[in-house]
Image (cartoon, rainbow, N blue to C red):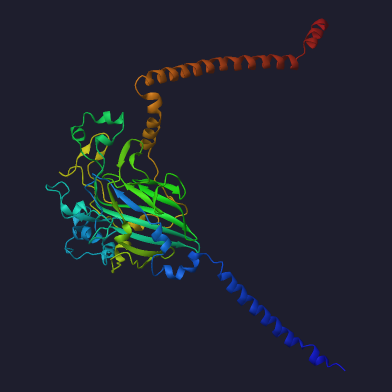
Length: 447
C-alpha cells in the first residue's frame, strides 16, 4: 500500500520548493545578465577612481598656431597674478592668498557674477606682462610645471558618458582689421585706431573646450567650442581628422577657438580665424582629472598615471565669478572704442567650466547663443554679398529687384481692377435674380 504522505509532499513543502526554485532562477538570471552589461557600466565603480582607458585613447590633441604668442597657461599662476574686484574696485587682503583650493570663497563677496579676477598688471603696459603669454609644449607635447587643462567626466546613466576637455589661456587676443571680411572692412577706413591694427574684443582669461560623447565605451560624437557658439561632428565624419584614434583640434590664432581643420574659418558671419599646425600639445599630460555627479553637481578627483600631478584641487570649479578683468569703462585710458559700432579694445573675462552646460542632451549646449537683430542682418547680407552684391553684380541685382517691385506693383494694380470688375458683375447677376424682368413687364401692362 502506498503511503500518500511520502509520495506527495504536503502543501507547505510545495510552497518551499517553489520559493527555492524562484530564488535559484533569480540568482542565475542576475549572473547571466552580468555577462551582457556594457563595459562602461561594469567599470562604473572604477571610473570614479581613475580615468577610463577608452577616454585616454580618444582624448584630443591640440595644434597651437605657429604665430600665436599667447599659449596655454597655468591656472594657479593666473590666480596669483590677480586680485578680486567688484565694480572695478579691488578688494584688499588677498595678496598671494588665493589658490585653487580656496577660490570658491570669493562667492561670499557678492552676487554670482559680480566678482572679477582682475589682473595686477595692465595689458597695455610695456613690456607686456610675461605671465599672460603662458607656456608652450615640448617635443613630446607636454607642458612642464603648469596645468592649463582640466578633464571632467560626466556619467549619464550606465551606458553614456560625456568627457569635457577644458583649455585655459591667460590672455585672449581678439581680431583686427585684417580679420574683417570685405566689404565690412571698408566701414572702418575712417577709424585710425582700427586701421593701425588695433585688436578689439581682447580679454584676460580664456576658457575653451571640447566634449566627446561615449556610448558603451565607444566615442560617438565631438563638440568644438568657438566664440559664442561651436561645431559638433559625429565620430565617423570625414571632417574629423585623427591621429592614432585621437581627434585633432586646431587652436585659432589669438582667439583660441577650436576647429577640426587648419586654414581660415569664418565666424560671426564677417570675421576670420586662422589655424595651422604649429606646435603639438597633448592636454592629457598636464591636466587635472575629475568626475562630476550631474544631479548634485559634485566634483570628485580622479587619478591618471600619465599625468605628473598629484594634487587635485576642486574649490576653483565652484567659483562663480569671472576669470579676468571687467570690461574697462569708455573713459578708462586703457580702453579704446570704435564709434557707432561699439567695438571695444577690451571686454570682460569669461566664466569658468562650471557655467559651460556640463549636463546637456546633445553635443551642442542646450541653450545656445541667440543672435541679435544686427547679427542676423550681417549674416543675411554676407550670404548675399558674394553672389549678388559684389562689384558689378550689385547693379544687376538692383535691376532685378527693381523689376520685381515694378512687376509686383503692376500685378497688384491689375489684380485689384480685375477683382472690382468681377464683384460688379456678381452684383448685376444678383439684382437680375432678385427682380426678374418678366415681373416688371407684367406690372407695366397692368398699369
